[in-house]
Amino acid sequence: MKRKAVNIKEKFTKFNDLWSPRIIAQVNNYQFKIARVKGDFTWHDHKETDEAFIVIDGELRIDFRDGSTTVRAGELLVVPKGIEHKPFAEKECRIMMVEPSGTVNTGDAGGDKTKLTEEWV
Amino acid sequence: MKRKAVNIKEKFTKFNDLWSPRIIAQVNNYQFKIARVKGDFTWHDHKETDEAFIVIDGELRIDFRDGSTTVRAGELLVVPKGIEHKPFAEKECRIMMVEPSGTVNTGDAGGDKTKLTEEWV
Image (tube, rainbow over all chains, first blue to last red; front, top):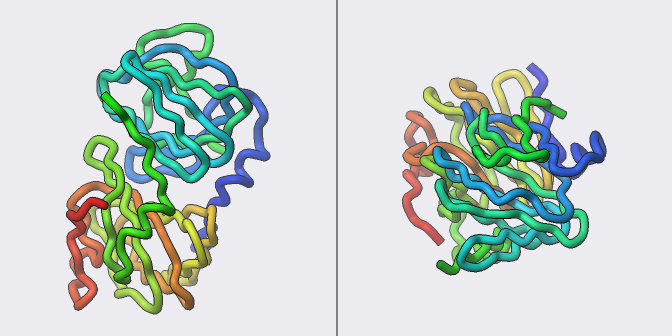
């Protein structure tokens, strides 16, 4: 069987829409998702799961109720389950997330950015 | 609470030994581990889990019984559970792995490179 490595940056050429994660790999029931983000996301938390953010390119600020953390290219931040957070990017930023399949991007906060990611690129 | 992003490359400055993964982050029971690798690893498989390899720097070849895949910096490869594989790097290469905590690096193949990673950096 031919196995091919996934080039993470190359996968970003497959789509242009913001806040719309695509799946690029899966380890058991955990998915690697990539997204282009810009501006403010929705305040939300995930009651059932932690969530890892890795910045591929650009700069992501994650606001918490008690402060904020800037995540730059090559950096990783895990948001623990149950902790409210709001991602923000001043300029377009490319990120990768690692979380269980079926994780809704806005938790149960809803809103017009809500997506259940099921599309692979 | 102050949350600090993890700079993946900076974490590699904390150790120099080969084939000796360190934990840098955890999402639920899944761990992000980094390792310096060079030369041949042991043929093995993981009966219970898939395993993601992301190359941070350099070039990793993963041999399978039916072929091999080269994974370069910025690329990712998931080795499915139960599939025998043998990582190899001609020159020293820096990698990140994502897998459940408690995953032994050589599966049940044993040998002198066997390690159960429990050390954080």
